[in-house]
Image (cartoon, rainbow, N blue to C red; front, side, top):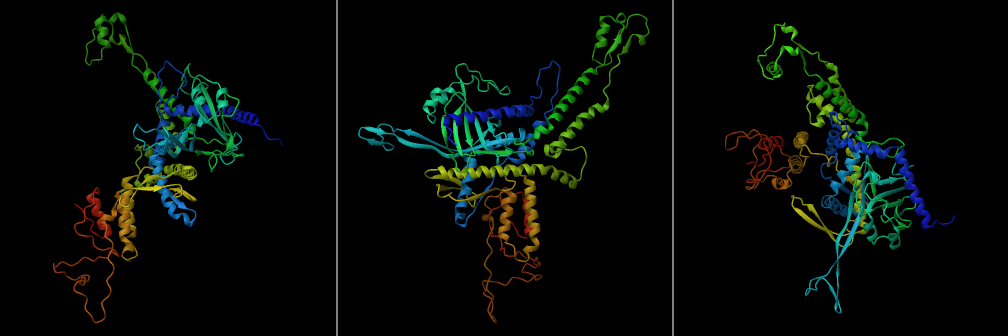
Length: 608
């Protein structure tokens, strides 16, 4: 079989993209995603009406209840070595990846993708490597940063960026193989990037011949997309640039719609792990590539709720009291008094007619009482479909429940959130794996990362590509991205002390370690070691027939009277020794909680 030319492969790739566009248009994917985005932002009426219409945006509430429960905090990424020789490197890698997540601002991009994940049904993240150099010429008389060759000064190259990056990509700009059912069986994937014609022509990464032959394809950034904000600029044209990744051939190429040549000819994929995209999938549908989001299931209920509330408002407006009166029986003053809002107003009546025949109330149309229950029924259906309970929304239900019943309801509601949390943690681990892989492949020179020391002080670690080289498994600490409940965390720490109390008397519990864990994870103290003293080494038993040394007095037996006269309480602290005198008090801990903790642990913690 003859090898295809570049012109033939370019035409083939463009045909694949055109087929995917037609498939998404026929399946109404793009229209569905636009409707769901409008549903979230409160633009739920397609036309303009002169009548008043109400909108109760339950969709906004649903998304913003789920999103903070799965991606509000920075993740705690744990790195485990696959080989024993890489164990020391895993410690450095773990510190580096957690520092990168904060320092390189991965979290904002990831949270935007999570919002796509909830609203549209899926989110896209792109992992890549950014290396930027700049030329620096020192000022006159200062040649320390430049090289002098003859009478000419050669500028010094300064590396301003040498790091991996993560960015969110719009679901509208990622196109995949229409025959795929998941990312595992996709044969190709492409990203659309809209750039101005001037930017493309001046980008030196592209082929010069291809740059000179391209033309603008539109005069608006989203000219063919009615759901996007129009940006009309008659002075600047726009070009759709495509990054096409052929997964089967493991090649990458760049081309645009307005040209007949490759901007970047097909080359081996630059990344060792393949294409750079990570897909966060919400509710998978069997045998369909695109999953569904949380808003797609409640969209008809949301629109029915808006219609019901609008009808209720219109019925209330129609229920306005009106009266029929005989015009000849009232003069101007009488009509003003009749229409007045004041109480106990005298209304003069002309003539001797019967007052019962002068004024009569107009019959009003009453709204059926069950009509007002429709709104509650719809909101209950939305709660059933979305799985977001009143407890999660921060509301108090009208039905009184016991603490056990409320806990059961909350646990059932948290089941879906736990499933989403597992999906988010898996995506974080995948992104972390790619960031480290990119650094192993492309990083040059040495870099530094900030870590937290044992006592909470910041430490700086210098590393290069060799320090993070190896094969690692990435795991996200369960619940680290979810919001923390301080009361629940303290209660769990105290329950741990209660559970370990029977074992403390046996001497099999490391009491200093237990106390440090309770103080650190239960009360948020970063350096608990300064409040805990290590247990002293046990004294050797005296020789037979000898007396113990004077420096080690015999402890009084249980029930014996000390010199003060009061009996000593029985104590059994296992391996823990007494707390040192004058130890600094625990700052930031409630004294009542500290007293309860001291009683449970059988030791006196220092207090103010």
